[in-house]
Image (cartoon, rainbow, N blue to C red):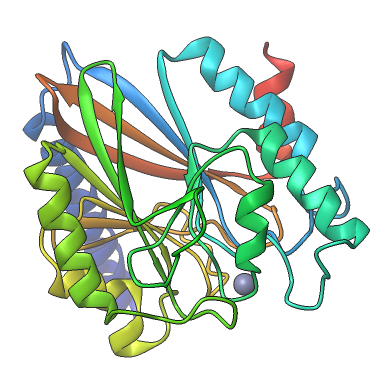
Length: 282
Ligand SMILES: [Zn+2]
């Protein structure tokens, strides 16, 4: 019995030791001195939960959090990965009106269409929708991909949607992704983000499978499976993030940039309580 206890302690010490060593290696490996910090905020699968209620943060608090970051960081971008709305929320319903109001107040830089979003919604938004695999013809506010230049860094953004009842799929997702990465790189993109309404659960169709099979995507901001990835998940060379559902979390990705190159990324999420703390300290 005593031997077992000692063995247990030894295993604990060994594991703790390994943990520390790995952390140390991680922090000493990358020299972050002289880097610029970029903040990428993200939401997904809001499904009309725009009010502060239960665990939902409420869009006004999200607006305040976005402003907090914009006051404290020079380079802030905000994205949504789809399913802002519900299929059964009619375009002229109060739910849809409230959601559009919230989205425009948050002031996203871009979003992608979820399977529950009517493509007509894109006409109401003050910001572009990106989708590389859906038919977006006739919608001036929709693009296959776009580049946002921030403080000298060219950030390429494209979108992929699981499917849509409102806009038929015109291209296989992975082929669409490969074409988008190629086009964005040819236009000089130095960091590539996919806004993917894909989810982590559907095997070949998942964001993990996309990361494994399409090189060149640095960050996938995911949705669809309503999964909370508190610190994201690294798949190959890609960081995949997703912030749960119903506006219960705001996702935060911090980029460390040196000489127009992202040298490190850090993912986290903020709950309603975290955001109250953040705003208290203003
Ligand atoms: Zn959803």
